[in-house]
Image (cartoon, rainbow, N blue to C red):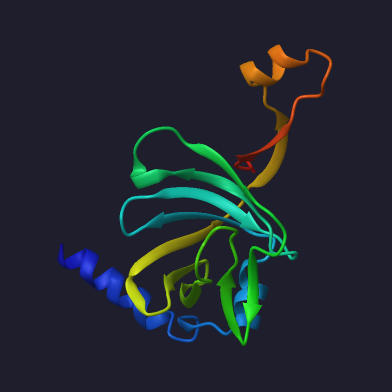
Length: 159
């Protein structure tokens, strides 16, 4: 136990220049195009990538239970608004903005502004997004000649 505390303290001392709140521009450079796994305060977890157009491709497992689902959010979902990173989603009555705190060389915590308890921890890793054809019984049964829709799938690089 003492050994773990010493290691953790050593890492905290070694990282002060890397840790801290990120501006919108710092966050853009740190996050855009890179693969991150995430875990949230209430158990939700997954992985994903944010692209320069503000679109998102990834996976999500709600509350860490049940099936892992593919997720895709269109261009303009994640955007900078007055030097803050915000999410614009159809059907939401407000546009949440986020506090982004870099916690290490490869990780950050994102929390909803004004709701510090509502956060997700993100860790960068190597991976890629591929698209696969996803057959659903309704699509295939309705029109056997129509192309199947593309669905994003995340895979980790083995290198």
